[in-house]
Length: 199
Image 1 (cartoon, one colour):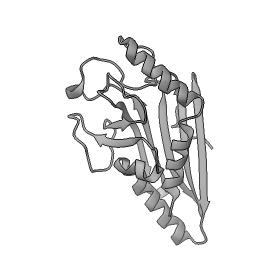
Image 2 (image 1 turned 90 degrees about the vertical axis):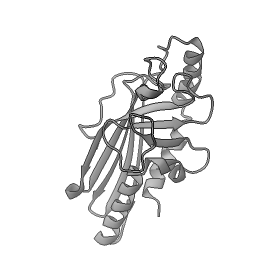
Image 3 (image 1 turned 120 degrees about the horizontal axis):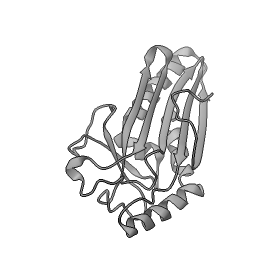
């Protein structure tokens, strides 16, 4: 069941990917939850969990420096997607960690990311560097219920960002956004969700 902390769908496209794995013992299930939690936090390794032809992800701070710690609200994620890069983002799409919920006592963790400007030090113009508008969000949750481990992806309000002052940026966003709308982003997120639950 979808959580109240997942943004409501009000515009554009939505994408739901739900996966689960059931274990024989509580010990196995808890071990799998802890492993999935570590993987969700390891944003710099998401491409490894998603497999071939994946975008690459890098957790960075406000100075644009890559981080090797767990994410925090306000951190940036630099994304290098297959295909033409964002001019505004200097070759990358950028999102920001906007929400993080980690309730170990409930065996529940959730992270939300939303399109953003690049860190100020890397910014040439005050524009969102992403092919979706900032209302869009990527929400991933991991939850252990009894012996079943759930990994869920909720993409919300996915609307193409056509608001750049650069015509070539809008054309690029239209191209990438169209691919996402017709389902080309589904395999990547599905592989990541599968990878979070992987052995």
